[in-house]
Image (cartoon, rainbow, N blue to C red):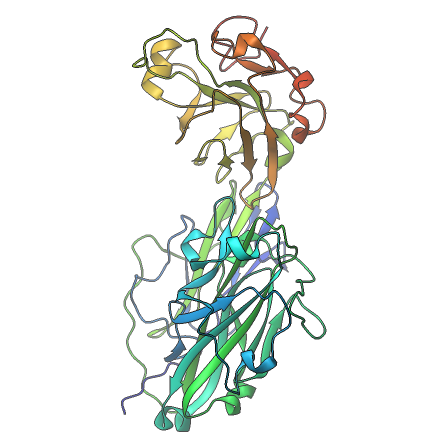
Length: 454
């Protein structure tokens, strides 16, 4: 058979102030070093969330033969009691009653993981069990097995897992001890890290492979039964000795050759690879949240029910106002609303005491108020006239605000054209805005977008 493999090229590591930094919170102005693990090769990176490698080009690592692709057919179930360990592979097991599909397995009660899973298990997992069983069948030929010299399991996971190859454990993350049918992960795995395809070298387990049908089984683990999301998506790749190396495609037009460390002045998603000769490394994909955004950004005014005129065709001038209560400039890049409305901020600086506005309809808002006001963008969705939950998160998914407003709080804000204004955005717990005492109707109809209400 024709078999191609690739020499391993390690992805670059990220460092800030001389220490390894795998994404997370950093200070404004920090320099991001990208370090190769071996001499030779070139680091290429992007700051816009795109891949520095041309889509569709050969990855070059972990290896050349994909035994299990992320979109492989698989079955999954959330156990309601203990099962025979045969579900892990290595023995006959009937999984015909399990959910079947392709892609990852998971659920998302907000937004973030939907693109990674093809089997949605929210109905059977949420508030029922923190464990999920997954079985992925695949075949290996005698020729393949004779040539294999390396094996890598790569997993996107929230929050942990234990993996088995034909019944034998080969890898685990965020779990200790012997797993039971209702086990939980011992730690959380942040949303930003969970979407990375993390590689687990398991070459010492090549002898677990067999000619013909094999089973990769994964015990997926959430940290709690009421976690807002869950994700397991895996691929299994193998390499062979003395195999030919294919020529990958070129560098993406959005990529930058690393020479000097970029300065982090705004939250950003960084993707980087090493290109050595004709071989690409795996992708290093992380998010850096820059500056005290979660500590400083607050919602200060909401016009959820503009004045009723009786004309259903009237344009909607509703808005949300945000302000910076901190002592330094913050950049709102990648801050996003995940409930109530849908909007992700671009790179936008907000000075101390400054305001910015998100609106339902830019044209309607500017016609009602002024084109000179600090409108940051137009959101998707609408603010409910009856009240609803609003959720605002920073670049790493940390909750800044999560509260519910109610149309019963003040009659003036429910169709009379007055807005809800926060009495003091800098006072109290940001998630205490469920309490109407933190709010007052605006001092005049239409509110005071872009300025502090009188």
